[in-house]
Length: 206
Image 1 (cartoon, rainbow, N blue to C red):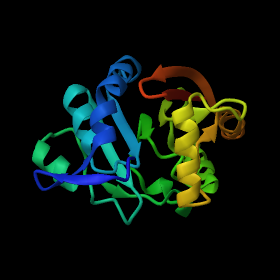
Image 2 (image 1 turned 180 degrees about the vertical axis):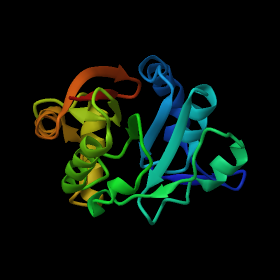
Image 3 (image 1 turned 90 degrees about the vertical axis):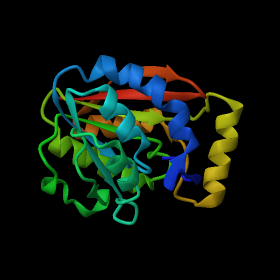
C-alpha cells in the first residue's frame, strides 16, 4: 500500500487508499459474490479492510501484513467495531507459513507487487496457489506494464522513483506475471482498467 502515511484522528492514513477504495469496491462487489473469508495481503493502514468489510457484510475479511507492519491496521479495525474483520495476522510471504492461515475462499492485494522484491511476488503467487481452493479468485490491484511498456508517463516516473528508492522495487510486467501464474496454477481471467493508470487483475485458481 501507499507508504506515505499521515496521522488522521490518531490513525495511520493513506491518501491512495482513500482515493481508490470506492472504484475497487465497485469491482469487488461483482467478484466476491458468495459468502466466505477473503485474505488480504499487505493490509497496511487497514482503510481498505474496513471499507470493504463494511460494504460486503457477507464476507469475513482477514488482514495480513509483513511482521513489521501487521499491527498498523489495528486502529482502523478496532474503531470500526465490525464483526466481519478478523484480527490481523503477521505474514512474511517468504517464510512459507501459509498453512498457518485460516481457511480462505478468495484473496486481495493492493499496491504490493511493485513494492515487493520479485522473489516475494513469486512467493505470494506460490503461497496463494497453496491455500486457495479450486476456482477461487485472487484480485491484484496496482500499476502494471505491458510488454515492457508503461501505460502512462506518470507510471514511467513512478517506476523510476521506485527503482531509485530501492533496486528491488518496480512496476511489474503483465507478461512476467502471466508466466508466474501459469507456473503456479493461477490463470489471469480479467484485467480491469482503474483510475489513475491502475489495473485490477483477477486470477483464478485452476
